[in-house]
Amino acid sequence: MAAFSISEIKKRIADFPKKNLIHLPTPLQKLENLSQELGGPEIYIKRDDMTGLAFGGNKSRKLEFIIQDVLNKKADAIVTWASLQSNWCLQTAAAARKFDIRPILILFKTYDLPEEYDGNLLLDYILDADVIIKEAEKGKAVRIEDIYEIVKAVENEVKEWGHTPYVAPIGGSMVGGSMEKPLGAISYVNAFVELLEQAAKQGLEINYVLHATGSGGTKGGLAVGAKALKEDTKVLGISVSENKESYGKEVLTIARDTVKALSLDLSMAKEDIIILDEYIKEGYGILNKEVSKALRFVAIKEGIFLDPVYTGKAMAALIDLVQKGYFKKRDKVVFFHTGGTPALFPNKQHLVNLLKK
Ligand SMILES: Cc1ncc(COP(=O)(O)O)c(C=O)c1O
Image (tube, rainbow, N blue to C red; front, side):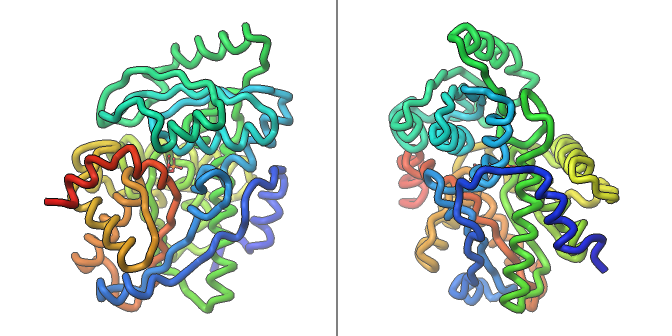
């Protein structure tokens, strides 16, 4: 039996007001060709790449809640950070602009991509976002401990410009900066509710949800949703950057903060946070043969483009798990497409080289 009913969870989420920025529900579709070709479980896709804000993606769900928080706090600028080709930063800039909030993005060069107006960097430019580019260790995601001073300095500078800045933590995931509640994760509890309602309409019993995980808000929210509403659905997070021990602890913190924020009598344990880290391979944002093959496979079989940093890695993992016999043939697996496709373009050279071989 579920610990909570859908209507109870919806009521708790409704305590957190949000701005309507996106088209919901996002489609839940069966990947007929892919399922048949792989000969394993039935594979479905949740199209969070089709949210309709900028180029879509998981971050726009989070931003519905975060932008409302920015407005509640009467801030008129938003300072955030991530990697050079960050989807989070693009989505933040697009959402902020709609509400006349000035976006200030600190972008770290965590991989060897040129600082050209391409992919998300081009879109940031079209949005006239303030962009500050900084050097960083390659192949690793940005960690707040390493860049705290930089963010603080930018926040102070923005104040000197006469603005009231809202500091949004990377990915809108971990509570911090001006965000006092795990709003990103709450939006993904909501996404789990949405998924269950769609599945019920389609007569679908979901056994697994699989998604890419980076800053942890998506993972934390989905894990809480599953624990509260359907504990027999396993949520598999494919890490793109961090090893599962240290990262698992961070996600558990996000999940526990989420349970607390929603006043749920639910105890989230280490075992509730399933993270697979063996697909990180060469490091964060570094393309490999399996990812390039997964991108081409899904494009050819389903006419759907994945991104090279997150969903491509998650799909390479899904394919590998099917081939290893991880799932039963009658299982139903939902793959979350969390967006990020603009990053295909700045990665064009790597991608073409890998696909040519
Ligand atoms: C396309 C895409 N998918 C998945 C993720 C991971 O989501 P989260 O940061 O909530 O773990 C990100 C994060 O940037 C992303 O851009």
